[in-house]
Length: 130
Image (tube, rainbow, N blue to C red; front, side):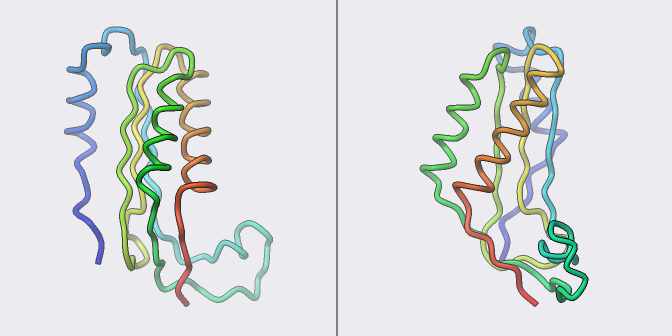
């Protein structure tokens, strides 16, 4: 069972109305989605990997909050918001949304990459279902 998916339009409206919005020259979003191709197929070029039918996904909320706080401390970053799904997901379901607002493109791109990497590598449990 997955959680209700947020509206990225609403998130952007809220971000642009925030107290630091005038300092943001860029907002960047990430939307992770459950795909049919197994990680082994796309990362290790294992053509024998079975198709994914879904995914079990969970996270440690305290670790995610710490990752968000770290992201907010990065130079030029003024807005960070994260939503993570939970439970058994099917192909096409949203896994996560991340929104970063900052002063210039390189800092916003770096923050997004760092935060998503931190979340995926240290905060979540995900198991492909076949």
